[in-house]
Image (cartoon, rainbow, N blue to C red; front, side, top):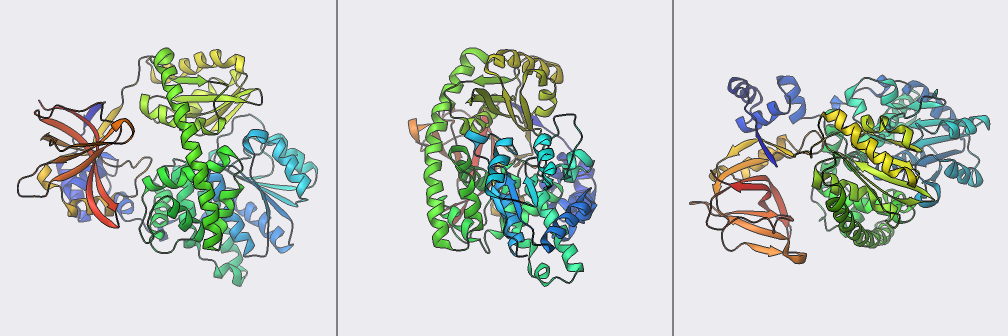
Length: 572
């Protein structure tokens, strides 16, 4: 890993710190992240709900609200098609919950990924029409590229509303009513939203409209009560924690410590997140989102939708335990596939600019997770595919290259694809995998103007003295910089000239993790943890420089300061 030390203008840093009443370290981090103006920095460190924009500023919002309002007044039959990932599931649960309060009980459908594929496919539309006779179909987190399916519904006299954030991958005229900022807007805040954020804006607009009609039901609904659901989808879909997303995520995570809906309370329980405790972005990413996703990956995603809408904690616990058991099975499958994929990379593709893997025996429900792990491990874009109904289907993940730009150059070799910058889905004929791999790597090489392996670069927020690390410093990080996430990553600090004590504890399967302690003069020792780094351990009798993240951790309902090791090197 390449260590990058960034120096900010000292006068600018001091001025920002004085104006905002923050430490110079926090000021330095804000400047590193592009917050040079006092007003911008203030909005970032103290986001307020009142800073949310008027939802009617979104193009097509007027017509979308009018469309829904007409069908609500008519007591129409409404069907919802939502995707099977966390964004689609949270979007579906949110909209259904609101519609129920207006006397509308929509039927909802989530794709069965093994028989119906992704999104608003002709297969799920066929299943929906066999079970319902809707006047209005609302597609959530899908539908942008389902032009033929939408056209067929309109021919049957069924109106269609699409709320989606995926990129249009075909050059055909849009039909129906669609809210998708990528098609209509140049507003970076809106384009940073996933579908559940757009559904939240749509619900906000609908309630505003109904309140102008003096509808008591609209006044009774508290929009803030949905921040938790919106935060889940936003974090899980790897959206930037900037702009309006930051407001929603911050207040959504805080709500977990105040009042949890039964479904999320049950999910937190099986994930060992105590009641009354605020959760972090990491809790969502590594504990909650995988469990919400697992049902759609291995079977039917209706279960997590019903969990989020549950009103009884006992009923919710039954569903949460079933989901948790599925998650354990998912982890077993994922571990086996990851090991096979790593061996394949090491043997054949270690020097490729991007990694494209295909194995017909892999479980298609976990290829996206494996792609994400490999993208992080190898520091380059990764696509992992399995065989599904005779087609090589899979998912791509990237942290440093825009996958939409890459796939746009490979379209001739695919059957279909879609997604956004950091996460895409792709389908192609198995016999085209090799030629697709070549095109994929060529596109990445052109975009980066290089063919060598990418070296991961770590931006260092500040160099700290080990004696200056205390609870007040960590509280300031917590108060001003959290929640972390995309485009607001957890800051990484450098501590120089330290040694791990010989009471280091190695633990886990094959003792691949370790806990370490750093001695300080006249102060409590610092405690840290290193995940998957036991094979990369320094000599005890040599000074090292370490890169760490610093935060509070919880154990047995007690909070303590913990370092998380990112990298180390011997001191000069």
